[in-house]
Image (cartoon, rainbow, N blue to C red; front, side, top):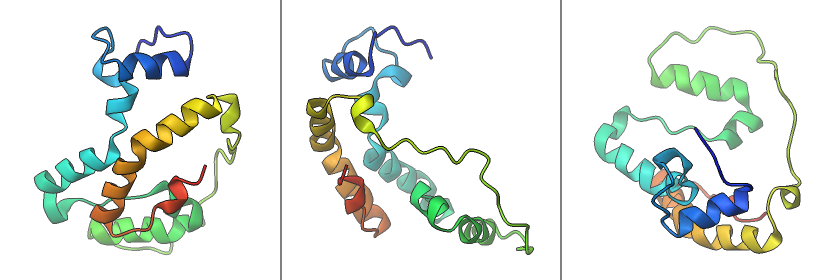
Length: 130
């Protein structure tokens, strides 16, 4: 992925202006429309689709792995406890984007989060509470 913008905010603004110089993978507003992408995947794959949330990985990684193995109809061994290989957390969003951009992004993605919540029957309100 070639990114020529000097900052994430510049890249975001270019994407919002439908800048023709932005490739598909560099058009951040469109590529992260998760609700639309999942909706399309459900239409294509139906029950052959397993949607996995990072939240579940953080909450109980062993249970998530077990759920995935069950979904794939693979044997569930009592596997060793999963160890985090990178437990770094990044919680300081202010260092990445301005508060103004953060609010703009929350407003932009709210319909996507609501759609994903409805499609997966999950409460995703915590995704909005930044």
